[in-house]
Length: 277
Image (cartoon, rainbow, N blue to C red; front, side, top):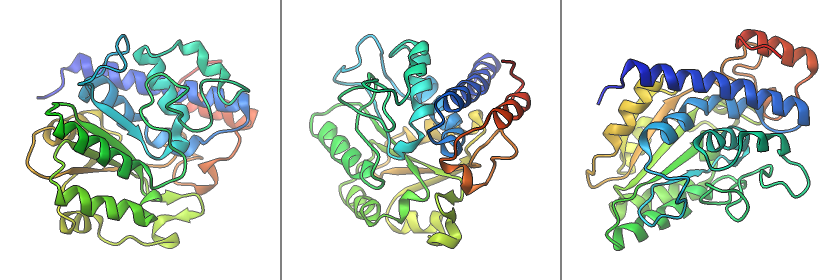
């Protein structure tokens, strides 16, 4: 179903606000992961504000959809989206990485409302999500499990073991979105560990593979709608993104995987995003 213009405008406005707020907090804390947080912004927004059936008033509802941020270092953007959705106050973003905060450096299912799985060590999210998806199918639940992977993360062998298993058991309630930004901690993914023709590879592993622009809300929502139709196979959406999206001097730069933001850099970023201090 095509998005209404008002829905598209609303979600695009949210994304701009999320980028500005996350950058402010990371500037204040002098820690965190700006590059991957910015690249995953539209993906998380489309998931939480369009695709997933979740209720902050009943966060443990049995038939809720599950969303797992396997690339857990992008937690700042996840937290900002969860706050906007109503899982906790937006002002709590100011406690990011503080001592005894609920908003730790990586998502914690035991501390943070709305977080389904503690993540951080890359490669574990898909396997856990598959277990959730198969359990839901055994229970006859209509719930889906969504997983956001990073493309540096798919260097991990556990990802491909989970891919084989998901196809074998026909986990068609499992939907993966790859934040396909082409850059990981140490440089371009094609230089660090080439993964070849990803669309062909996932299809050979037995998955239904879709591709879209990961910064186009309309395209993401359309792909998520298509993926939600059971077809006997797990689905992956290869969402082409840009690391550091929205801030020109961060875009495509591995140095911004975890670099602190200076006052001058923050001011420049805010100007590009149209914000004011």
